[in-house]
Length: 403
Image 1: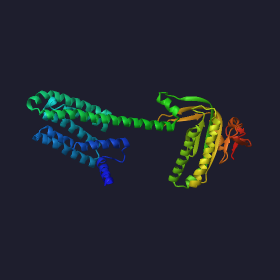
Image 2 (image 1 turned 90 degrees about the horizontal axis):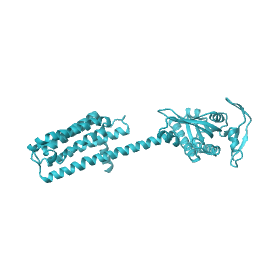
Image 3 (image 1 turned 135 degrees about the vertical axis):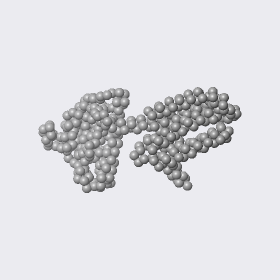
Image 4 (image 1 turned 180 degrees about the vertical axis):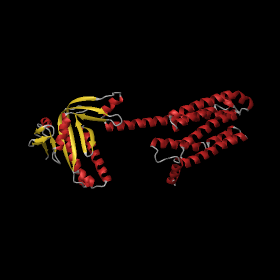
């Protein structure tokens, strides 16, 4: 019963939905439709305030009838803008008519305030730019009510005191109350959008860099003298991906890299980017730390353990090849639409070469990283024969010894 009622309500408020609508537009449409349903019953009050006169019946029943036709037309055509314009025009004309029917501005208890809901509703349904015109329509309605008031006061008998009091109270409470809730709603939406935007920004670039961008820094480029850069690559991934269902491939990478990200945060290492099945991170930038080499090594060891666990569960026979190098780098933000915090310099190139010339399932480090960790009781290394490092010639490297 409850589920059926909820389904019915959902169908009723989603009559204007289109598959291409984004979440914000869909929500604005649904709020607009709810307003249309409210106009099926709200105008009936004018019958009471008009003392049941034939004109009050015509107005009190006419607007709901027009609203019903408008809603049906919306459900069939999905023309939301036209629907909104009909709601707005009928609403302001009804308000002015009700003001005249009840006896003018003073006698009607400031009923013209209801016309202020037109720009408020337009702000929500049509956006701030188009809503401005409806604010001037509201001012025109107020001006018309003022100009007509001497004639209305002389022609239409004022209602009794109780009716005027009720009208005055609802004219102050309801329109202004609805305006307050709209402002509250828009502010909540703005804050939610800002929070989401900030979350996306800090997911793309380091928090400290995001803060600098938010404070107006237009170009961010810094030198970081003491860092350790990590590159990792999945060996055997390309042929495995070629023979595996795409959904499984994406799910595997998403799970794996999400775990890498969490571990990087735990180790105090900054993820820089992923390219295909490759992963890049740095310790010591943009936040400096003295133990950058040890932090990067802890991340590297943890990544090997995570891959082993994921492969044991999911089945692919993949290995991670990891390379580390230490030294100075230059870091900065590039791009406008899709910004990226990236690193450049010999240390970055050397770390990349350590990965590409490394051993599957092992961690290879450059002499610069070995110098920083060779006295550590936690890490043990074995020297490799000098290897040819592209662009750098022959170089002696070191492999971490596990166990």
